[in-house]
Image (cartoon, rainbow, N blue to C red; front, top):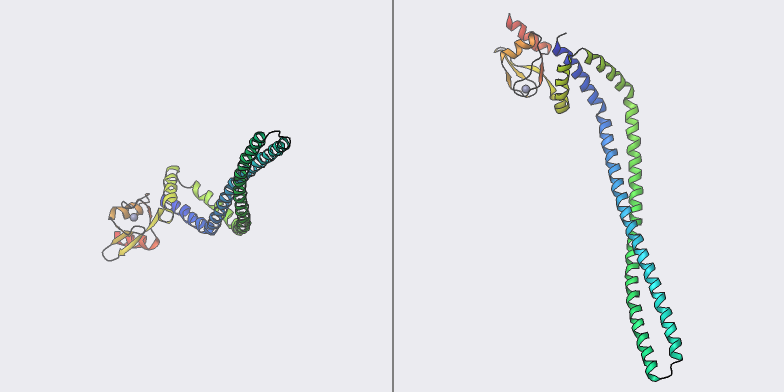
Length: 250
Ligand SMILES: [Zn+2]
């Protein structure tokens, strides 16, 4: 087995591993999306809760303020009842009227805030409903992920152990080069030499379709690790192309 065939073995196992895990990856992406949505809902819920609390505190302050004004009015009324002169009476009355004006201003503000608080409550309720729905979707996605994992676990372990063995047969620098390529290009990390014209002895790269010079085929036949000069993938010789090249050489 030459170096290309050894890398090819790893590549074929990687293709199987990628295929086997494709549905799991999709399920995992869906689950991650559900988690993201839940987090967004929680952030909004937190913001609404904080705003609601601030409004409730402001309303409570205004209720205290109103109570204070009422006490003050009550006190002035008592004084008014004991007023000796018309002038004193009028002074008290003016003060009461001014306090009443203040009171209705504060009351109006408090009512506005209470309306806002009701709005927040409605928004929070709607958000809770939305969150419950999203939570159900999340649970379905989570169960789906676990099922996919269980479904492939045996085969995955087999393939991983086969790969671990196959990798030992590949020189470290070649393996690193191949793994970089696979990370970037997956299926197109390696490509077969294809026969484009048997009679004219023309061959092309199975990934980028560019024609390959004869040196490339000779290098491959000689068992050397060979890259496509156009797309940089690692080339390999399928039996048919190897046979055509060998008979050509003769
Ligand atoms: Zn190519």
